[in-house]
Image (cartoon, rainbow, N blue to C red; front, side, top):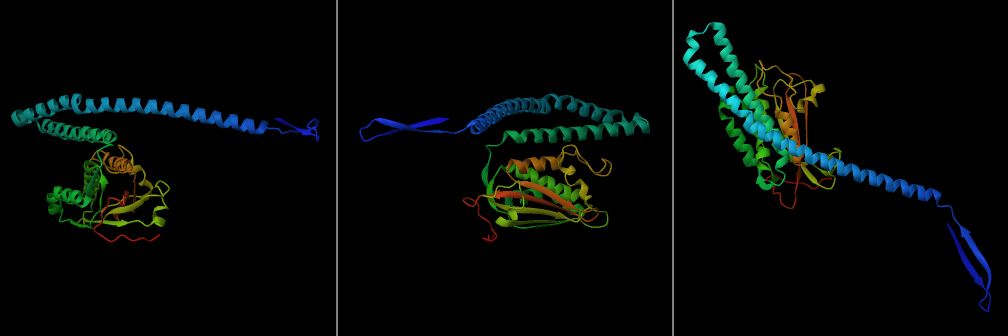
Length: 306
C-alpha cells in the first residue's frame, strides 16, 4: 500500500512529493484467513443446527413409537402370559411354570425400560417448562413415595431445607426419585440404610473449581449421601452412561438409565452432577444447580463469602 503527499512552495506550486509505502501482505493474509475461518465456523454451525433439528425430529418419532407401537405388543404379551398363568399354570410342569415366571419378569422389565427410554428422550422437549418452585416440597413428596420401602428396610432419611428456584418440577422430581431409589436399593445386607440429603450455597471460589459452571452465576449444591455398597471410583463416569450397570439383574433391579437420566436433567438445568465413592463405603452424589438470587428464597442463611 502506497501514500503520496505533495509539498508546496509559498506560491502554492508543488515542489516535491513525500511518498510512503507499507507492506500489508501479512495483514491481508491474516484478515483473509480470519474471514475464511469465520465462514467455515458459520457453515459448521448451520450444518450442526440442521443435524440437531433432524435428530430432534427422529427423537420425537422414537418417542411416539416407544409410547404407542412398542407398548401395544408388550401389553398383549403381558395379557396372554397372565391368562396362561391364571388358567393353565396347574397343568404345566415345574419347568413350564418357571418359564411363565420368566415371561412375567422379562415383560415387566421391558415395560420399565420403554418408560425409562421415553423419559430420557422427552427431556429435550420441556425447555420452556421452568417455574419457580420450592424444591423442598418436591423432595418431601418423593420421600413420601418411598414410605413403604423406608419402613420395610428400616431406613433413615435425613434432609436439609432446599431453596425456592426456577426449575422444571417434573424433572427435579425424577432426579430426586432416582437418587433416593439408588440409595435405598444399593444398601448393605448388614446395615439399615441411612440417607442424608444436605444443601448449601457454594462460594464463588468453590464454584470456580468447576470449569463447566458459569463464573457469573451463583450456585448451590445438594448432596445425596448413603451408607450403601458404594462402587469403585474408576466407575464414577461410567455410572452416568445410558444402559451401563455395575451390578447384575439378579442382585439389583433397574435398566441402567436412571443415573443417565439424572445427568441429563441436571445438564438441562445448566448444572453439574458427579459422584464419589469407595466399595462398601457408601456413595455421595453431588448436584450443583444455578441459584437465581433475584428470585430464590433460601430457608437457610446465604453468605457472601468469596
